[in-house]
Amino acid sequence: MSQFDFKQVDVFSRRPLKGNPLAVVFGADELSDERMAAFASWTNLSETTFVLEPRDPRADYRVRIFTTLQELPFAGHPTLGTCHAWLEAGGIPKGEEIIQECGVGLVRIRRQGDDLAFLAPPLLRSGPVDADLVERVRLGLGLEEGTITDAQWVDNGAGWLVLMLADRAQVLALEPDYAQLRGLAVGVIAPCCPERDDIDAQFEVRAFISGDGAPEDPATGSLNAGVAQWLLSKGLAPSSYVVSQGLTMGRAGRIHVEQIGDEIWIGGSTVTCIEGTLSL
Image (cartoon, helix red, strand yellow):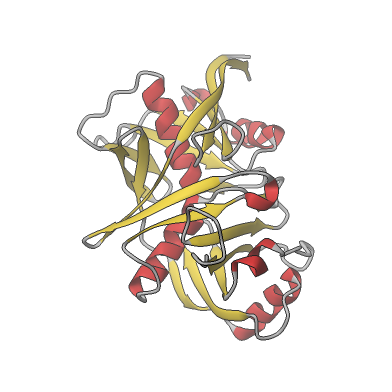
């Protein structure tokens, strides 16, 4: 067995235990795919990342991202959480931005005060969702007919499809039948009402990944990156807005979205909760 430096961080929150946890393993170049997958399954977190030496000379580090079930080419909260952990561990970027190498290629990350933000990667799949699949998801979420105002693919590597509802209360009331949603990554979003909702956010989001060890994700960067590209391209959101996520799970995730020219940046806070070594 070998020892590895390790951190567990909480992403999209300034307060420990209120965001989305992530396990980060450093110096993982010698670990096999099977060992990485086994450890990610063992942590039972939505994602675990492994930091390796970059292959692309432009990158500061390379990361592999695992759920309890599979490896992902990209994910948002692992991107910010890994970058936070890498910087905290003494990582020094080659330039003003941090460049992460992962399955989708190079991802730009920048500092925003004490927070970090990543550049939303291009969508691998976009556009309307087939009506039969929308109906399957509607039934799986227990929604009444006519409550879905729109449905779109916003897949940037994690497979997301998104339903839009009219009312934040509908999002918070969802009780999914995960058997009907199996094999899908489903996001649900609704606007917040300033007159009714006492909240510092413009949208409420929930994210469901049936079959995963964590079937609901408390704060999701990849989903919100895809949603932002949809909303902003259709003029459905301001150029800068905040998303609330995780409330029904006892969390208080806050995802910050900002459009600068043609670029969309997804940011938030990260706090370290655990650090030490592990043996694998």
